[in-house]
Amino acid sequence: MTDQGETEGSRAALAKAVHRLTGSEPICLDARDFTPSGPGRAEIVADRLVLEADGVRVVNPAAVVVYEIPPAGRPALEPLQDVLARSGVPCLGTGAGAWRTASDKEAMVKAFAAAGVAQMPSLCLPPDAGEAAALDAFTELGGDVWARPVSGMGGQDVFHVTDEALLRQAARRYAAEGQRWLLTSDARNFNPDGLRHQYRVVVLQGRVIWVAEHIQPDSDAPCNVAQGATSTPLAPDALPGHLHELAAAAAEAVGLPYAGLDLAAESGGVVFEINVHPAFGAPGALEGLAVPYVQAHLDQTAAASAA
Ligand SMILES: Nc1ncnc2c1ncn2[C@@H]1O[C@H](COP(=O)(O)OP(=O)(O)O)[C@@H](O)[C@H]1O
Ligand SMILES: [Mg+2]
Image (tube, rainbow, N blue to C red; front, top):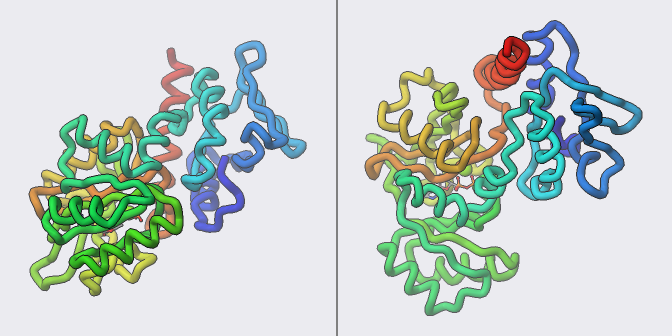
């Protein structure tokens, strides 16, 4: 089940993974049908999960895979997540609270702080933060900071702020969008060549299964591929050891059994961000991400039928 309005391509990779692992085609449903105002129905009838939409009726599926749900579409799926959780059908996407925490960077920063997960110091500001409040936060964080909207992706509206003029520009942008925003001290994540770099890591059930190094030639731009960074897949054991533990702890702090994390090795090792559904766009993502993610569902199905 995915948001079929999305075009990132993760659902095609998942469908291939299901076929490869089971020999069967998955039944593909549009998650948008299962919002409270949508035409779909998700119910438990006589102890069996029933999903029905668009002329398709699924009774007691072996597993439900929920993916490619953009942040804005998540709140409306909470009733569905509740039904999926109560049904007992294997699904790694039933944690509505975890999705909420991961979809709001202020909540995320608080969850990391509560669990002792290493991150750079942050302060959160309201959309209409006055100039004095913004300047106080900027100064308190050392005058070399990153500004991020609490809800965003792809490095959009993320700015490296090193002076008051840039701070005012960023503040105006978030005010215009009515967004709360974070200021976070710079992690000084430069490689030996002086280029910004960081890792995109995917954790599945406490284990790092995917690592890519991102390098950004513009030191004032976010290390997102969408903002011009290059991404090179690495073997998981190429990730510095302390980042394995950090990534697993960050996923656990938010309550996600599966998560994509942005991490820097510098400043002692820090987490920038957690993602609920990291895109399967990179070469090798079918084998490296989609297959193990679907396999984790099938393992739960096997464990349930053995019990
Ligand atoms: N404190 C920081 N120090 C260095 N770079 C940062 C910092 N905060 C954010 N960035 C850069 O901005 C990117 C985008 O921020 P992130 O929280 O990952 O939001 P998005 O959801 O837009 O990807 C980060 O992955 C990182 O490259
Ligand atoms: Mg990110």
